[in-house]
Length: 249
Image 1 (tube, rainbow, N blue to C red):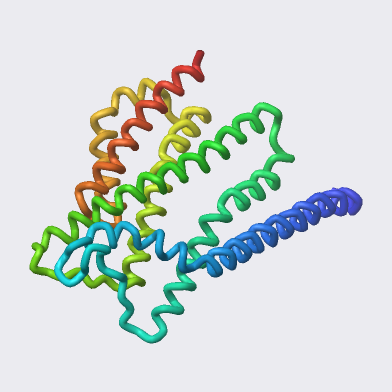
Image 2: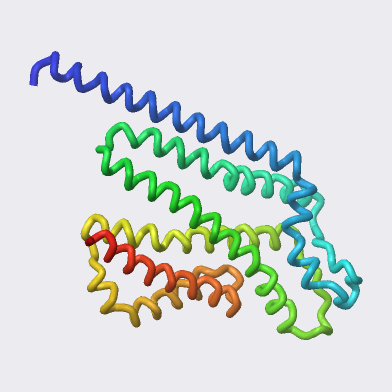
């Protein structure tokens, strides 16, 4: 390879690196800006996130008709709680922006057909992740009701705000990523790693695997969370088979 050829290959590489740096800076800036917005709206966000806990603890011993409030046991805890909410909230709000930056970096190297599939995967991933967060939100109340009630009404629930918010955020993350399951299956079908015949033949094992996965990944480890995660994942499994058949046609 001549010196001119080497120099010609360096130019596109430097352009890609500059473009990658620009996309990373935009993504990082979006996380910071969204985090600042959540930091400013902290009281509204905290009131919203603590809603399930207050609902479950209504009329509990020592709580009253409006339920119990979250507690802190450390002078630095209020600051850490606010920073945690701002950090997680910033990441959550910036997901569409970050995904768009990734897409804009990858799309120049794709063919027209690949771009069409890529848009479908991008939109589907965002929608399914948000759907998982919505399901997780309604699951939190059931999970808390089970976990706080299993010890009996003699116990007074006083939950640390930091631990409670960690549980809620982990629930969002677990359900959000679990609901990406059909995107993974359709991708494997598209590249030919698996086919619909194989998926139909392993239905029973898939049901067992999905149930085991849901039991392990749910942070609260309660039966309601397992059910609300495993059932949609199996429905997604069957939906992926139908999509695979349509792709064949």
